[in-house]
Image (cartoon, rainbow, N blue to C red):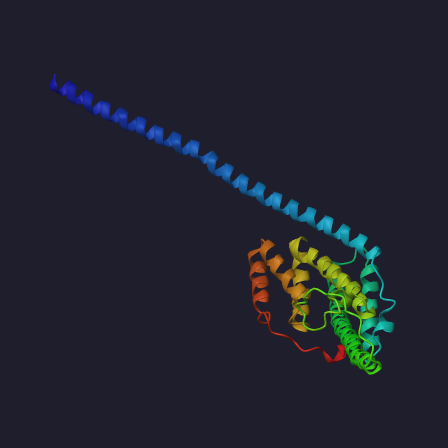
Length: 281
């Protein structure tokens, strides 16, 4: 009787062990599809990211085409800027714009990004020169106005006539020249040229940025090479810094992301200034 009970107990343990092993195997088989589902989810996410990038690229390139066909011209550039070297700056920028506008839609990416980079650099140099000339115009206007004011006051005193009361002007944070409002910065020909050139510079860099941020990886690589050359030619250029930073945040390829990060970090310290190039006066 005892032997039968012992045998039954041993048999029960064996059955329990078999059931436990079967349960583990069943659990393992049930867990396998979860791993497969996770891989499928990752693949779907990557596919979505690729599609989203391609959609952004199509939107940006279509926008660029519309912009370049409706771009403002630089016909007045040589009339506004007429010192040594200015004619070359105007001509180079105008040629760069024409080259961008005439790019064939099926041109190789290397040619497209090189053309966009050259045009952007030419426009940046021109905008720097135009901003300088705009400041000169404002300074000349203020000096001329201030030089005439004491003479009028002296003449009034000599004739014994009382000077009419001046209209009250609100306090200006820019100092004593309250009669020259800030809006005068946009009145001169050079200031108007600045607005046009800055718009063109922004659009050309945005067009280049579409290739750096949203194009397929080989094209992003080509755009990175062009941007790297731009950084070497013009180390301090805030719009370019912004472009590199945005591309770094969006990049999914680890190698290119690291190179973008290194390029962004290699810029000059914020707040430092580069003197005006001799070619831009």
